[in-house]
Length: 170
Image (cartoon, helix red, strand yellow):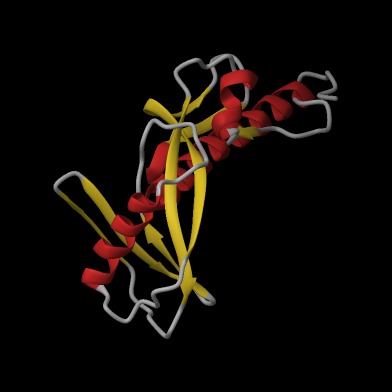
């Protein structure tokens, strides 16, 4: 049981897992996206062609256009990278406004996602999704919930067993 009465802790520290968990397999992967006003586009799309990732994520107030996933740790984006992202997206959706803002984020990359219960603890690790975080979030959340429910069941069983033996569980 944790200090504040929690049965389970879920670690979704992203890049912070490198320091928090001593996981040196985690490294930053730069993602460059463009954001533009949404003129009424409601569809999403994603494609990979010639190793270039192209996606359009329609949101209520704007649209996210992507993108890149590279090993650079710089926030500076050469204009040709932004122009290439816009050109790929505009080829798919010609209604996109020509004005956009460039945004850079750093994604937690690992050779494989870490989604597991740490041995001997009630800590569930869920990080290292890289650029696929949006894509795999629902499946990973379902797996975390499955593990958390199993931990909670075992905590209740342990607590019941201790009460039945005349020993306090707290």
